[in-house]
Image (cartoon, rainbow, N blue to C red; front, side, top):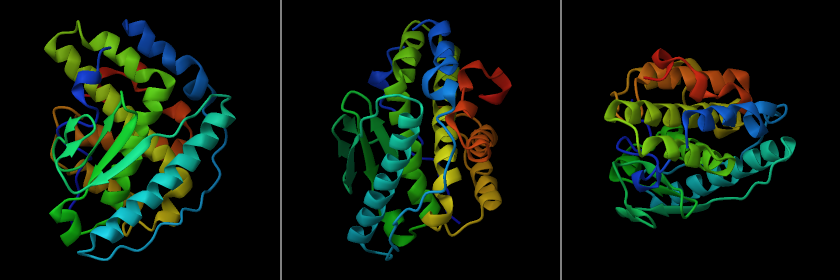
Length: 249
């Protein structure tokens, strides 16, 4: 079974990470979406189509349906928290370029300045369209859009610029693991209707066995945060900024 974590090289375009003092990232967890936990989660039906191997149109339709579902879910969570929400642009391409430059790796990425999620359809996707991998391309990148809307990306950026190499690495891990957790929150409401072709425990085992990424951190911690969001069901479980270092490396 082929499993990858979205955009192994970079999920958020690097030029964007300009971050605020450590307290800034920490304060993000004390109010708004994270502080209120975004309200109770209600099961959500996603009208996600079947995928035909070898069909680019089929994959585009799947990603578009996933985007509509994620958008509806997070709009409701923001409304429950009393926060303004705006939808990202979504670009689905077979090429290697996006509105914010070259697409790193083979997955997807978020362009913060343009508030655009870019999903790349690869030859591997066409040969082996594993639904959960494809769904995760959208769910994880939507997590970065949520971070943009609640100020996490700007706060992380204020920390990032003056930080040492090791500190930057840790900041990157905190950012990516929170996006994983947000994806888990979305799955808590929508996973059943996505029809992922894999059980949750097996999916987490596959995530744990993936190759380690310098940007994302240890696969076991990525799986742990995704599971935390899934089991908790609300964004309030996703404050990676105050978590111990061993949980986010």
